[in-house]
Amino acid sequence: MANEFNKEERIAFEQLLEGFNDALVLSKNVSIYKTDSQSMERSGDIIWRPQPYIAQSFDGTDQTANFQDMTQLSVPATLGYNKSVPFILTATELRDALQEDRLGAAAKQRLASDINIAVMNVASNQGTLVVPVAAAATGFANVALVEAIMNEQGVPAWDRYLALCTTDYNGMAANLADRETFSGDVRDAYRNAYVGRIASFETYKLDYANTCANAAGSATFTTAAGGANIYVPEATSVSATGEKANVDNRFQQVTLSATTNIVAGDSFTIATVYAVHHITKQSTGNLKSFRVISVDSGTAITMSPPFISAQGGTDAELQYQNCTVGTPSATSALVFLNDEAKPINPFWQKDAIELLPGRYAVPENAGAAVMRGSTDQGIELVMQKQYDINTMKTKYRLDTLFGVVMKQPEMAGILLFNQ
Image (cartoon, rainbow, N blue to C red):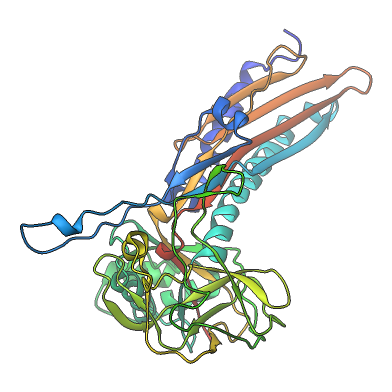
């Protein structure tokens, strides 16, 4: 067969795939949904994934008045990442087998990094639980704050992860290295700058991290009871022509006095708007944090999560209530939490973020040799080779197709130091 891979190349590809699997550090700690290739092609590579239900309970044996509709919310997930590493080897370069191995290893590392970065970007940009710390990273007390905000809002207590930039991670390791109570942990912290599991979180060190902006905006918006900013969740909406469509309830567009100097990624609180435990609906006594997803005009932003205070009393509002409102003034100010431009340390519960492996239907009899393999998570890596007799050059390419979606922004967030 033309351009067929030889046995040595196949063995090299298997080793490359194994290394690719090992390099998927962050993406191993999110949930996986394996898509059907045909269905995704017919739906424009978009599939709606369900968010977790939240149920209510009532006292007593007679529940006649308590039967209610259960609103199932969902979010759109897209196979939106098409990553490829192409390269060429000449007939003279191919005399050195190590040349091919090195390029393959570099391609593997790059594609694995692309997937990890996609997970990190989604966690950093869309997580809405914000923990600002005034000082530099010191250790357990910092992670305990992250645990507290998750616990008080009812986020599941298992499969929690925290990814820290190198400076902040090493600051925590230094704190651990100074201790004398845990000999094994102290030794690892001192020799390898290793932190490991702390305050119910598995921690990871990032060699790259996003940076938050230094918030420079100043704005107010209406939060009065019954005002336009009150959000009512709905599973579907019906257009004027009668067409029914799913609704993405993670975001809400609101009107501000001005959006000057406000940027996507900013985080803020609002006076007297308090977070609630998502199951009991009891106020935590702490202000609810919100994120700016996009700046839409001179007076409008899209924020997350939506402002669900249950003031309307509908079944969906009572089911998905995420905040409670005191007695705000007609216009309440946004109090920004990201005061300084510093690295973002994302944290999340595993079910908050979902990775969707995709698949290319590459023909295997079209003049190019094709090898494919899947990681433990189902992420497919495709390797292709084609020789050009005119130039005596061989083209190689490694490709992967995947999607990442934040299913529940209120089960993920960011830890910011030196704010």
